[in-house]
Length: 368
Image (cartoon, rainbow, N blue to C red; front, side, top):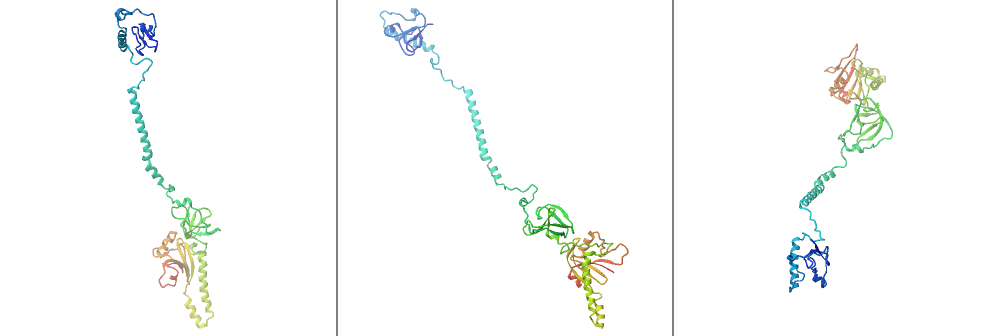
């Protein structure tokens, strides 16, 4: 259908309209003649009489007819008009079916992020504090004392000394018995060398061996000096006490000889009586606590027809130690000898009134 385009705003109106439905500008011929304007897109149609329009209504009210036509055109236009005005595109709202899932997903994500942050700040707080409270220096995995990690030798002597193992000793990896490892066992009589160091306790003394390790001072002695071991070849086959004990016995024999020498200066009558009085006397010489199979030799005794070694330990201890060394000893203390020997040997406790009791408790004697 042909449309009448408004010359003022360009709105397309119905062909029968006399004013623009949008801006109310006149569209009729009458209005055009008095100053209005309208444009036809195609040839102007011949309006039918049944449409209620006459170009020259006789004796009619032009204004009334125009108002009536205008109202009629607006009514028709409202029926045929699109939902939205021309040249104004409506803003497309986001479909609710898509908006709600997005909002819900965003809320879930925000909740998860907030929960993680809260757990990081508060949930881990006690754990992190506990780790911070742990000591920075943990004990070694093997449970050994922590002081060993920072130990340094405090030398007490600049020179190397030669010592002898006085009794079976333990060679340790540090100068202490606190959590140290025994590297090896050192046997009585072994010769060792090293330098003295202060023990880890700050008071004891240890020998740092030249070949490594430490041995406690109490298990060491100067060779031939107090506390040092002494070699005694005594056995069920050999009744000799060996050269070292022999030297002490020689000193005892020298004492006896000096006694007899005094008789030469006595008158004949007194000389005989004196010699008879010293004939059975013994002579003892102190030994500087020499070690023998864990026992302590404190003296030797020279008798008229025999000799003996005195120990600090009791009779039972002496018998047990000698048996451990391979010497056969009967329960009564007698030492059976192998072979044709004139001597006999015995282990026995010294009596309280024996002169030798001042040196020790037990005596091993051999004699005719």
